[in-house]
Length: 117
Image (tube, rainbow, N blue to C red; front, side):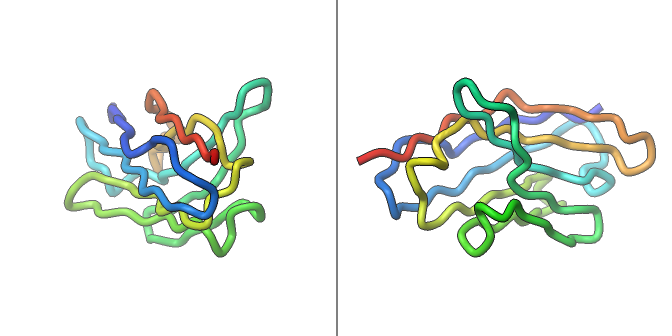
């Protein structure tokens, strides 16, 4: 099964940008739908963005026009480009992989994003 490791989180001022990365290993990365979720303290985990095996993308309304999800199958990596960040974007961001045929899910450990002045 795939193993996932996220990176790229940190502290940024409102209006700033971050680029998150999620590297997968141990399987055929291209056969997975990849998703980014966020979870703020005391709140439920929310879907932020997804990209399927054909490269089609989808976004939560709250991040449309600000965030971009992409994947590089040759590098086994999915990215989340985050622009115009707001304090309400503060959360742990987690990478999720769903195998196309079996629907088996795997989660990364998460990376903290804090947007504050």
